[in-house]
Amino acid sequence: MNERTEFPAGPLSSLIGLIYETANDDDLWPHLLQAMADFLSDARVHDALPIPRHETDRMVASWFDGMGNPLPTSATAAERQIFTLLAPHFVRACDMRQRLTDSDGQRCLSESVLDRLPVGIALVARNGAIVHMNRAMRSILNGHGGLAIVAGRLESRPRRLLDDALRDAPEHAQTQAAFRLDGGQAALSVLVSRVAREAGTNAHAMVWVASSDAPLVPEAGLSALFDLSAAEARLTQRLVRGMTLEDAAQDLGTSVNTVKTQLKSVFAKIGVRRQPELVQAIWSTPLWLDQTGTAQPWSRLRRPPAAAARSPAQEDGRLRLPDGRWLAWSDSGDPDGLPLILMHGLSCSRHLRHPDDALLREASIRLIIPERPGTGDSDPMPGRRVSDWPADVAALANHLDLTRFAVLGYSAGTPYALATARAMADRVDALFVVGATPPVERFEDIRAYSAHFRMALMVARYTPNLLPPLLQVVIRSIRKDVYGYIESILQSMPEVDRRVFEHAEFRENYARELLAGVRHGTRHFVAETLLNVHGWQIDGERFAMPVELFHGSLDWHISIDAVRRLTARIPGARLHEIADGGHFLIYSHWRDILSSIRQSVARHACADE
Image (tube, rainbow, N blue to C red):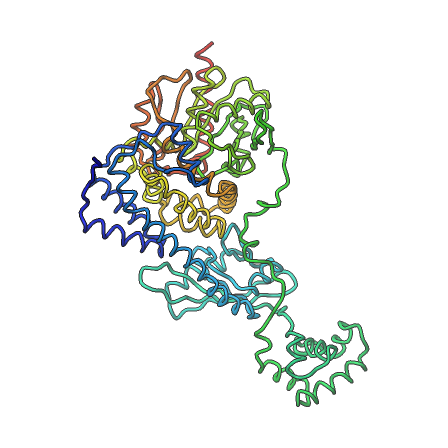
């Protein structure tokens, strides 16, 4: 007889309603997460599902080949019932989200109107993060050194001019800041004004930019409106720009007498007698407002520098593995220093490193970052397990002639670092973990994570079939506008981590790693998430090498208390608590961490002698 759990109608109704609301507003995900957490708690679903590795592999396959029930066979009746209740609503909510995405076409039409204006227009946040810009602004940025996009944010040269204007504009509704920028072949006039905002929304400003080298009035428009010939239209374009007849003749490659004859015809067709009247007549039409051209696309300007067209450098490599897959990695720092193999986090890649490699050389460390299967330039490995990873690391170490090395796990790279140290104990000198993510073994473990990540963890643990549509939202956001995605997650970070993102080099590196992390699409992103939740555990065994963890007391991603408990479960492990550190310690405290790693390895090497 099937056991059936009765759920209270009120909380269930509220939860379902919130699912649909979240389809319209990504900011509601934390609220939906808490509601689901409360719902599952009331249903007495406190422990994680004990899913064996073979079940994990079957679940991953079933999502994409349409075979079988994606829930594990060990799921309880209550867990299956929860899935049955919520799954249809998540599907419909995702459907709604898709329709909302389709409506973006209307927004694109509105943006195309702005693209026809000759004045550069950009909507920016207070820190210069760009929300939108029109085609004229893109053209100006593409050809003038006075304004530039630096890792997703608009900056002036000198930088203080725009920074000061953006800082003051949101505070004073009636205040407009104006300044000029010289550089290149033309000067820029810049006006910064406040944009009215709804209560509770972030402050934004409009940046208006006009160039003294403004585009010509469209030739086709002049010909159509005034019945001018092509030669007459080209002459009119130059006269409206302020050229003399002599300058226009030289620019057109013809004689002054020829342009004088053409000018008489232009005067007659437009109905004017003098050149000033001609200019006034043209500017009184809407022709100057309709500019067409081939400005650099917005997506190209937002792309991390050299991310897509980056040629293989000396520090990058690819290795053909025994099973035929390609493994990609980066190799930087001191080539003769301590080899340190880093296991990157979720949706990350070999680009996950501090942009200043001089710090590695200073510490005499050689940093090697291999990309896991299905990440960046490494080929996917269907049905892979966490325990499969050490074989790839061993192949890379052999290829690089590394007899011994240290291992560093960062964030969701924690299980892969532990697995490598366990499987290669005879070659790993020391194990380090920065920003560790403990295993999720009980419902309470999920609460240790930030609201930004609890949803994915909870769905992966209790209703894994919902992971693909959930993570598709993340992947779409990263691919559509990676810098916009970065700015959105900044809102949930503490100040210590937001300060890290003030550095353009870091934003560029982070953007590269995010794009590489989702390169292979939903299937491999889902598999990586599932393995982080189900694919590993801490069994209390003592590692053969020293184990040290570094964690920020202000870490927003995973609480310091959870990492204290994790450290206590690893016999002999040592935890370095960094009082002023957040989650991005490998950037904010990289020099100190490298120094500690170097000293620790040297200390234990002396002890072994």
